Image 1: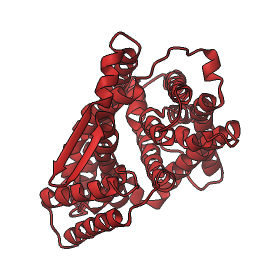
Image 2: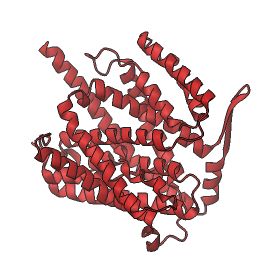
Image 3: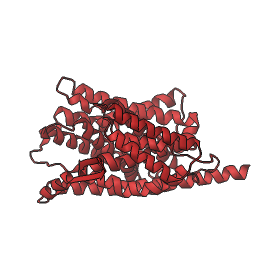
Image 4: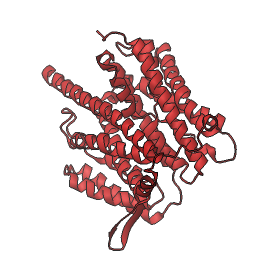
Length: 402
């Protein structure tokens, strides 16, 4: 029995190691793609960059078809695959990972909640009023796990594994919060027929799960039907990826890493980390900086986003951690010092991918000034969090952990 438990722990540790390596490398690639997009939008290539974003792409099957510009295929289609991966990670952690032990979930859950509420509060305070800017309150609530782990990887072996695990858990729960926000606040003009088709496809997925079907083709086919129906229903299409992920069977709980869910997660992760997220960053980060100045950053929208990410995130995450640990409701992870915990809290302010995604939903029809301010706020807050978090952790982790 002891040998079997040890083998399970070893496989779980190996899976975690592979996850962290992929996310770290993907985070560095994400930064490069974002810089390329920004350069393309502010160079002689700007015309071609905008043409590529608006390039129409149509897929039809009989009278049923989807006709969208390339940018929306990326944001509504490829990002649904990203959210599918998020759902797989959430389900695995809930059934086989750190979230199975309620004593271990208390600290990251409190940190994730504080790291969402405080930035949203800062943004709301700076943007209170009837001008529609409040639609962006959720933009600074997100944490980009790939970007954050990419920065953390630059510190090498000095970083305790427990700190990486805590940051990952906070970011995963953060993604769950983002899913809830998208479902509640960015849904309108519902179509009963499309929702009915989506519900039927979801029912078929649940039946397949209960029947023990393990072939991916069944789930992918029903998932595509559900995605098209959700896309036309008024609910954001990425939520179809979440629903699909939650229905993928996990397999034998005693053999993590061996079931259909783990195999799908393992297959998708490189494509998402090295393909989908960098492509999303390249397509969405490019905004013309013509006319940008210090005054641009001082406007309520970018200031709310920037301060929410840089100040609000670290206050919310570190404050929640200090409160939970101080009250005895959670304990500080082994090998993690208070300065190290503070540095990690600052890194949680790297919103980037999810902030860009939520911003694209919140200000889809906003004028150029709001679009520029949104991008400037996300870039400034994320960059300040990356630089400050790296500096604090470099001082806090002067030698490799014992």
